[in-house]
Each structure stands twice: as C-alpha cells, then as structure tokens.
Length: 50
Image 1: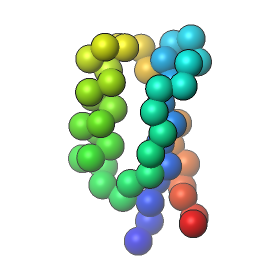
Image 2: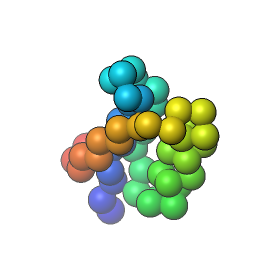
Image 3: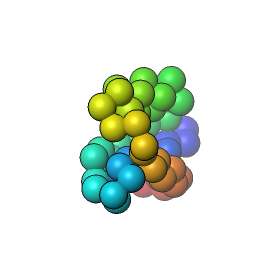
Image 4: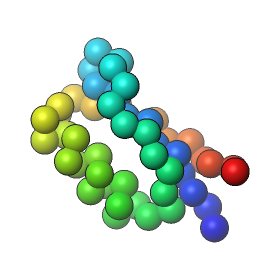
C-alpha cells in the first residue's frame, strides 16, 4: 500500500500541518479545512516509504 506524505504551508512558508495518508479524499478534505482560513497554501506531496 502506498502512502503519501503531505506538508502544508501558507504563503509565508509558515508550517500549518503535516500528515501521511493513502486516501486522496481524506487529504483533500483535510487540506480544504485549512484552506477556508488560509486560502494561499503550498502543499508538498512526497512518497512515504516507511
């Protein structure tokens, strides 16, 4: 099973959240909740090989 590690930062590169999941729907929902309050986000996705 492949997991993706997500790191979420705002436009000023302030760390906001970090999580690993194999569900794109879960990731979209979690990032969407943050985006309500901070619309300019940078989300970095990397494979989690652990």
